[in-house]
Image (tube, rainbow, N blue to C red; front, side, top):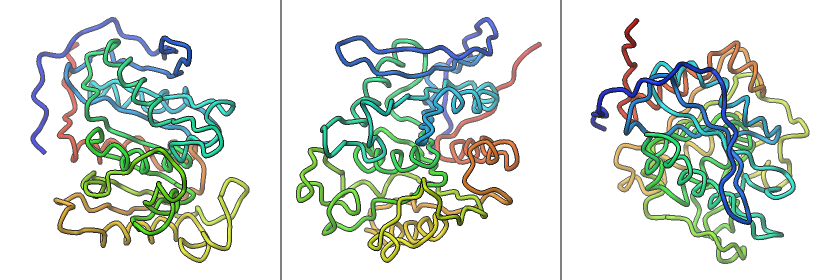
Length: 284
């Protein structure tokens, strides 16, 4: 992809504060927003999606240094448990609430609050957020320029016969969501797992079916999904084959991944390649 050509950076008063926002309407969407002191107008919006800890503010906070380095804005949606119990699957099978539509509303709100380009986002998710991220890329591939999936517990495999969320058949499972099967493999996706992330803890979804088809650990499930995606419609992928990597010395911990394995730098390295980001030169 060609490097981003943007107008001169917009200088603002330096701030290290996150701003909490809610969208208007009867069903407000909650999110945190970070705008760098030097914001590149027209740069893609970075979206960071939390896991079941729902630590949205911490996600945005941990990405602030890299956001400053590249002059990009960070949005961290908050999917509260009461309304978005199954946000990882994009649609709650019991209530019909759609977390993917909530994110689209948040992106529209971010368009009015920032100078960022919200049409093609740079999407990062950890654990349950990684589940959300790869399914969002399947449902809205034209809106995602790059996706980094870290520590997902399980995946939607590119199998047209299996019911969603295990496979791509949403109609048989009774979901209203539609997946863009013809273009879902075109989104550059990067899977990262801690090399010690092998515990079958309470946050890992476990069943005989998942263990048999996807594997018993997050490491094994990630490897199988990447291989399946690489084999899926290879003629359509246009160079967007998913990658796989590990973080050394960490298990399933967002804090450890950040502090011990420098996760934000790994994430932005992928964004830099996929979206042509460049570190900005700040005078002073």
